[in-house]
Length: 88
Image: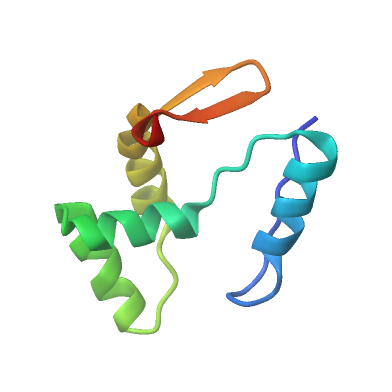
């Protein structure tokens, strides 16, 4: 099963995702969390995302995909299990 929650900031996507993790045992990948981590780490893409967000715009698909691909190296996907390797 795959679920995707879409909506503007503050709409409750994270709350719904947390319930899906709790009830259904599904993995949760948050692009917002990935954006915040990249911004905090001051990576080149993180700075690009920060500039986009600071301008009040939405991060485009190409930038989001590029960042998710780069950040996914911290995660190990095993079937339906998502393990954050950086927290081990």
